Length: 116
Image (cartoon, rainbow, N blue to C red; front, side, top):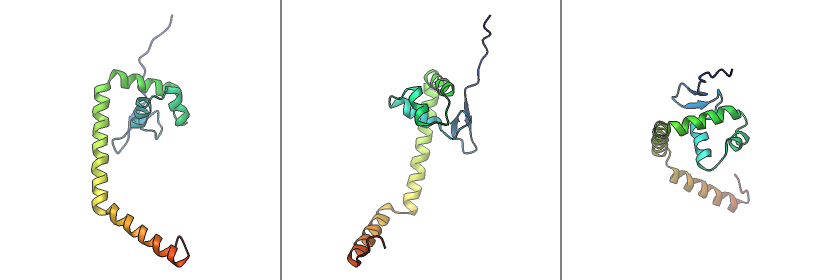
């Protein structure tokens, strides 16, 4: 007779509270985003070779059963990313960087050396 055992979902939380899939560096965010964009489990494995197909299917099943919790986690991750982006932009104004690069480019082209 077939013995049916409960399997662990191949997800782990790292020290930075990021959920990773199957002992790889690939994040749950990445797998869910690819799936939401229409990728199949096989397509996700092709795109991210460290993943194994069985793990991707298990993770997608978990996502489909626990959609509310996973979406809350993804929302929290997006908020973290937005906060970090705002901090970085406050420290390193992207407009100022762009202006300096454009000025350097103009000066370099005028001097005949495009990337000085």
